[in-house]
Length: 187
Ligand SMILES: [Zn+2]
Image (tube, rainbow, N blue to C red; front, side):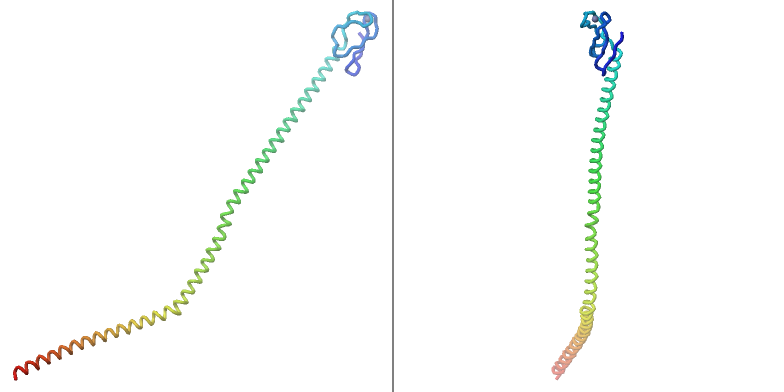
């Protein structure tokens, strides 16, 4: 049977009995129809083209579906990458903060170090001042104190010597008195 397919939608053919031209939608290829002129039953041709068209349509649908899945996968990948970069940024920020926290005590330690240096300087100044005070005031006082102590010792020795002399003198006086008393009794 001679037939032709137009635009993948229509199939044009002839009635095998009355040879009048007939056209049907390609989707009806393979179906039994009646000739609109003579009423003869005949099969719509173009089953092969319909099958080809169906395969092409399914292939297009499959490709479209594949493209949609690829797009979905790409979206998911972009979302994952975005989350990963967010996580990366968060980690970087956390690491930076941790580093800053690690540096902070050092930053605090620096003024303390300067403070201790100034305390050392203050201590040194105080030591020099105390040394100067010791040399100017305390040492002469100590010297005078030692001299006074020595004088006091000498004085104490003199006093002790005087006391001994006084005691000896008193004994002599008492002795003389006893002798005088005895002389008076003898007379
Ligand atoms: Zn016919």
